[in-house]
Length: 118
Length: 265
Image (cartoon, rainbow over all chains, first blue to last red; front, side, top):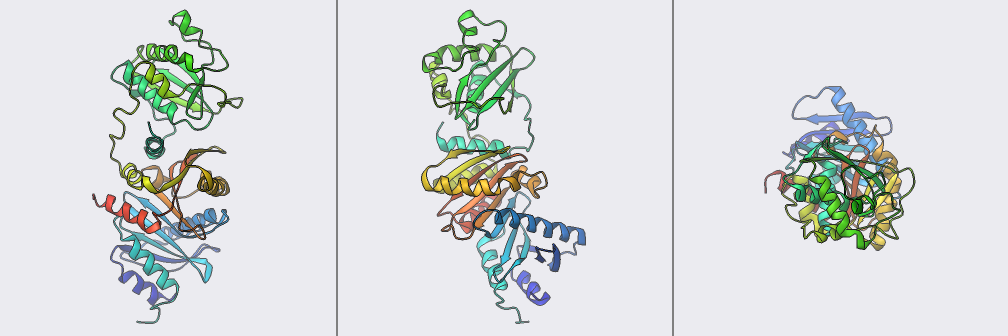
């Protein structure tokens, strides 16, 4: 996923405060776009959390398409790239984020839709 | 208390504050204390030794399993009448003991204004198939209402489970390395048990991330591929959590429900 695609993805979602594209295998941040500039340790922790969530889900016979963590102060959505299962899009959103819109947008950007529109 | 009320209570307790020891619970009168105690037994799915401390006044050990009070291992607390003391040390309790047990527990609640409940895995497995007393039967012996005053706390998670209730197909409790069915039957429970067994080691590990968020009232939602739209959500505290499965309330429905609740809707 290109930086432009990531930026466009987040620009279309006012509820999304940070979007990170991560390699779950190496636990490496491949790209990030946020309303604020986040320290690398924060991004690394998010990447690690995503990796462990999908590893947990993968222990079951059916791996997870996506995982949400909902809390009083925010919601986090993690979407695995179907074409590159070792990679995932991680989103930090407001607690009242529109989940349906987030899921649609995440799946679209992971399919490469709109990636080169800028 | 209905199955759904138990489920809500278990969720509420699992996510209430993340502390393994919830501390003293202060009650208004002995009957209130007894109802609180019976509710805890009514939520006890796995076989456990439950130790109840009534302030500094008395301590009671119970063996509970399958939402039943199975036995009162001895010795009997001091100050009980002979008929009450005779309930202790028996292998199991039966329906005809309901009134005596109710009066015994009420007498112990009358020794204090607070109780503290701790549970631990018993040394030997508890067999609840052949006996034991349902909390409802104990309450009924003294015309007490187990449902009175439940659901007063309107935390988001509570409201979420309340609203999602009609679509909860199955729920199981994970504690230590044991899994017990809280709600549901048939294929749905089988599917959820398999899922929970497969991920239990990872969910319960101290290294599992994000539990700090879940422990303070959050929810973890998995959308497993290939399960016909079923959604698995997890709430709990480190070392114990509740796992539930829904069908029609797919990921979007559950998450939008959370969004409305978070927005105060």
